[in-house]
Amino acid sequence: MGAVTGRYGVAMSHKSPKDFFAPLAVGAPTPPREIPARPSRAIHFFDPSNPKMAAKVPAMVGTVDVLLGNLEDAVKADNKVAAREGLVEIAKATDFGPTQLWTRINSLDSPWVLDDLITLVTEIGDKLDVVMVPKVQGPEDIHYVDRILAQLEAKGGVERPILIHAILETARGVANVEDIALASPRMQGISLGPADLAADRKMKTTRVGGGHPGYLVRQDPKDGDIQGERTIFQQDLWHYTIAKMVDACAEAGIYPYYGPFGDITDVVAAEDQFRNAFLLGCVGTWSLHPKQIEIANRVFSPSVEDIKHARRVVAAMGDGTGAVMLDGKMEDDASLKQCLVLVDLAEELAAIDPKLKELYDTIEVD
Ligand SMILES: CC(C)(COP(=O)(O)OP(=O)(O)OC[C@H]1O[C@@H](n2cnc3c(N)ncnc32)[C@H](O)[C@@H]1OP(=O)(O)O)[C@@H](O)C(=O)NCCC(=O)NCCSC(=O)C[C@H](O)C(=O)O
Ligand SMILES: [Mg+2]
Image (cartoon, rainbow, N blue to C red; front, side):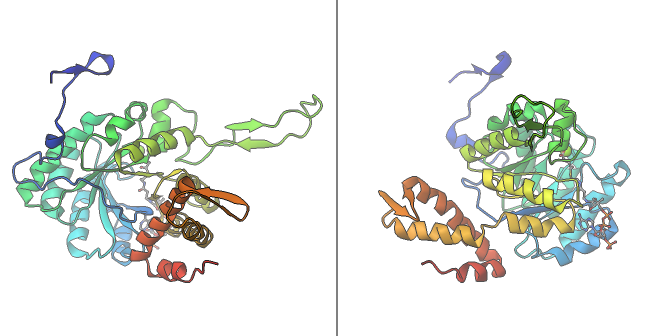
């Protein structure tokens, strides 16, 4: 098949389904056909060049689903090499048990990223689960990282393919989100990067994620009295982007995440933001401070009430077809499927979280 023309008349070439799943370097591991559903409720960021933070990492193993050594923004330019080397040291010295180890590399237009990839994959490639790539603009960025990872995995003798996670933090990235999600069999997921995205879009916010009191809808005036008391409803600045990202991820069979919530002290609003993302289909969020881990673990685990209801529906639906009445509400094949999303998630989480297992095991279905 010949070349086709994509957006803006740019020539695109086809790849056969067989080639899509072939290693991109001789000796590299075969890319995965499915991305395993591993719990990742909180992706906890730490700066490996910060001795205080680094010292806390070993004790966090088992308390958080993902530990992420951050090399990009929030690490001072003078500390980039120290952060990279610090991550290698921590990874070599730590047994991560059930906790995944991820990294966020520097952006693809930075002078550090090539050394980030070379060092991390050849030194600790066997311990790294996922490489998070910031400021992804389109599938070409994923193809670039995909090929380099394959070359380095082959060079370093890495036996398990390292997965790729993209951050959605440019307007062009949002426009291309479906193509990004489908760009490689290594794609694990996508996170919202609200701070960079706001800047790139020229939104007039100065916060790292969360809402804004000025983005609102006001109740209509009563009896034409525009000066009278009127309720205001603050709106969600991120709804459109998160929903678009969730659809792209669902189509590709990968996982969507909310990103950072920068107001560390406002644990209430952080919980709201995380819950909105959970309800909309995200599987997790970032944690920037230890106090955000507990919030994320709680919000991204189905509640006892949800699981109790879901199991009642599963039991009532028998072979899964037809319609039944439960507590005055109609349940059918489609609501059963929604309930199974929660039941399956509870099982995945219970497998790695003994406290949740105990909690879910005690639920009695009447
Ligand atoms: C936000 C922080 C700068 C706050 O740090 P600090 O002022 O030190 O907080 P505390 O005094 O409350 O800290 C108490 C102790 O806990 C340790 N600590 C703090 N944060 C972490 C952490 N993330 N991991 C492990 N340990 C942590 C402190 O060292 C204190 O220790 P001790 O003194 O021994 O008791 C800081 O939390 C921080 O830098 N967090 C990470 C920030 C980050 O990674 N930012 C980048 C991601 S967001 C982003 O990039 C935007 C996105 O891309 C977008 O575009 O939207
Ligand atoms: Mg960013």
